[in-house]
Length: 336
Ligand SMILES: Cc1cc2nc3c(=O)[nH]c(=O)nc-3n(C[C@H](O)[C@H](O)[C@H](O)COP(=O)(O)OP(=O)(O)OC[C@H]3O[C@@H](n4cnc5c(N)ncnc54)[C@H](O)[C@@H]3O)c2cc1C
Image (cartoon, rainbow, N blue to C red; front, side, top):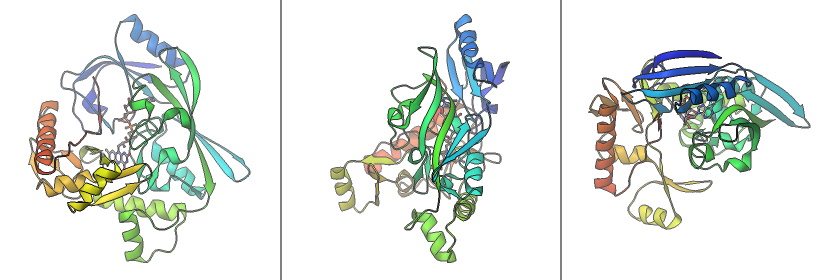
């Protein structure tokens, strides 16, 4: 394992904020994981598991603890009957898994193309886009349990997935180190109707090839037009979650003319729409730009500190609440 000292969190996260982490340990083999936790224990320091930092924000004072990062890479494939199993090691870029699957005409994750970050983080908030979520195809994950200090396998059902949620970011937050994730995929293609902007693109361009590779290319194109490239612009992607509503709440919102979308497990109102209607689209607030292409995204244009981000966030939350009575909830995780 590689132990590094005093590494700026701003250099490890796509929002590019945050002071120094006392130690950063990079894991290259599963056997090293207990040693990394043992190291933290020896120095009596807290731990935080980080991936590519695309959904994580650092604080100005840094982190007086040990950040542990999964650098174990590789994809193992096996096929039984018509199901192909991909075991993706957590240090692999998530998008490499999508590219691999699409190149083999395997459907199930092509809508999740180009989501930044590592495979290990995909189940944590149950990444989703264009009508797919990783939980649709994930069968199990291999983890190290930092509490009981054992390696174990957790099944899909044990992870209790929901919209941008699993036990890994709720009840069991910071407990498990994800080593690898296992996906079950089949040859085939997504079927119509596709999710909003994907369906619009397909209709407008008269696309008839719905193969995983074709959908991957289209999703990549839509994303490139709409979303900031983390290498060029600092952001954490969607900064706010969409708002989940009960059937009754959805009915009331519909009566007020708000656009409501039905999901697998309930209803949502798009927080980007609320931000836009609150007149904030394209605004620069304390150095944070509300994207003029997707209002859910905050781009760090000139924020100097976490404090600037927090002020911008709170102002946006306040304005949306004053206008609509909904509280926006932040999506990215904060390093304590
Ligand atoms: C431009 C942009 C677009 C985005 N688009 C989308 C999108 O369409 N859909 C979507 O769902 N998300 C999107 N995101 C958010 C982000 O890409 C995902 O949340 C992604 O899974 C984060 O991966 P990461 O490796 O960077 O995780 P990090 O930010 O490093 O970590 C995220 C969480 O996972 C935990 N974690 C990381 N590695 C491990 C591990 N080995 N074991 C246990 N826990 C771990 C961390 O503790 C943290 O809680 C976007 C982000 C950006 C910047």
